[in-house]
Length: 394
Figure: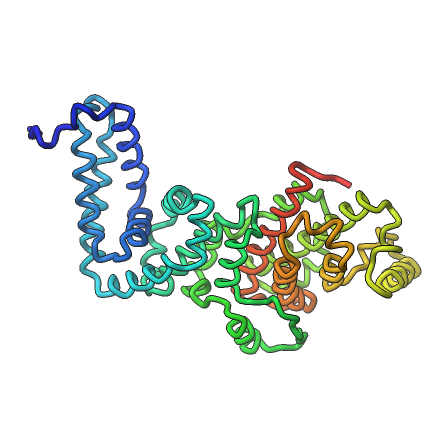
């Protein structure tokens, strides 16, 4: 028998009660969902057991108006969640994890998520998709924080304004500061490359955890996306010519493909906007010094070698894109409509070029490389969508 105190107030309108019940059900979708969402909001995972008890009472107060509806599985699930919280609350790792997430709560990444309304909706709902086993794999405080960060990044990079000031600050805080010119070395060793990421400020928490969990994490968080989402915008490209020479490892192989298609897309984006603005003869008049002659020479040598003649921009180096975009008149008349500041797109391209060097030599990629390809690739894709909201073939 439910006491009068437990009955909903007479002033409570059924639609509001329904909304509360639906929200309670949604938030109870999995232990990890409620665990992460409440721990961030409350800034202490040790209160998780108390939070789950409050959730249970809130739902029980709303039972009577909805008798006859088949909510029984929901209540059973809430009961199980409550028991799980109690176990978490007694774990010695809880205090350390709570401290890590409390620090995360005040980070530029979470500020960017809150600015676009993601924290209250997408973060909670998307965390529900995690396999609970991942929580066991990621029990260390850094891995838990990294898991939440990657989930938030996965949502943020698909926002229309992927280069807003808040987004730029958040990505710089997580991926490091790459605004200044970088001297890239082709033959850097793996350990040296990891140190370079660290020196720039790459967040090590993003790459914590076991190898087998990293694959599932980049998929579940939405970090890794199929290359077809690029081709939906830029059109279809030829297969990667070096596919047979790629190193073992599914993540590396897919990142190679993704970067190849992305680079083709960047070329097509530049060629499209420049030709729309200046006409088909734009390379002769709008390229930085000597770049036109360099492209033309490469094109002529390729044809003499028996290769099919491609568009002139197909003979561009990766570093040429930044120079074209940052040329003063090009930026003012064309590219300032796509990015807020030159340094923002420069930073993205320099991060990607650091990975591009490895693909030129068919070397296995670091986790930092893989995250960079997918995160920066999706941000650039959102810029392209400003011009091509649908499919573009040309």
